[in-house]
Amino acid sequence: MAEYKNLTIKDWALEDRPREKLLGKGINSLTDAELIAILIGSGNRNESAVELAKKILKEVKNNLNELGKLTVEDLMASKGIGEAKAVTIIAALELGRRRKQADIMEKKKISGSKDVFEFFQPVLADIPYEEFWILLLNRSNKIIEKFKISQGGISGTVIDVRMILKNAIEKLASSIILCHNHPSGNLQPSEADKKITTKLKDAARIMDMQVLDHLIITDSSFYSFADEGML
Image (tube, rainbow, N blue to C red):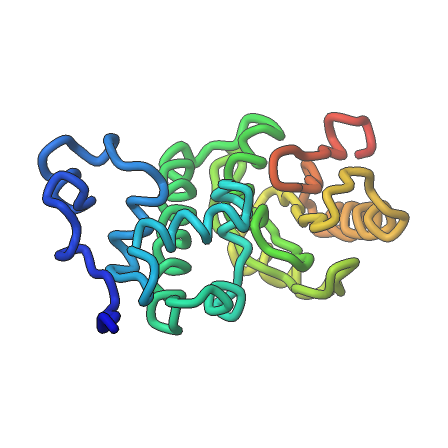
């Protein structure tokens, strides 16, 4: 019986090696599976790294946003993906998210709800639980800082108004934008969303600050309280 071994990139035909393909033809010539194969380096006894990457992508319907939602444990469920490979994939996806957000930070100034969505979508779109974030702006609507207030379960999170105002005052913010995600994909605000928006708006007014908007974000869309006349 032939002895099996892990199929590494070095075992492939030269023209099929993703690293060589990248160097010879450029990064855009590689498929998503080939890029993932470079990250994981080797497959299992019966599959090459590319074949294993294709199987992982198939499980998320070839959707990189869905891939970004997987945990280390989810990835390790695939034979041939150990902890180190799973962590490498997750780290690469996180770098992609941070790069996108860094590009948006260069703009700094917030002109409308779309700018807020583009800023927070890489942060919130992939996570399977709710997180509540605050964006602090100066008088020119330029970003001072973003920070996470809380995170919760699939259906909600707990908000501390005092903590929000404390951070805003310390950073000398003139206005505040609220943002949280709905992992369910439902864009409609809940009664709790409406109440916390009103509560923060009233509290900020006392401190001579304005709540400009509150966005609810899903994977690909958003709901803006300001755009819908809810502020």
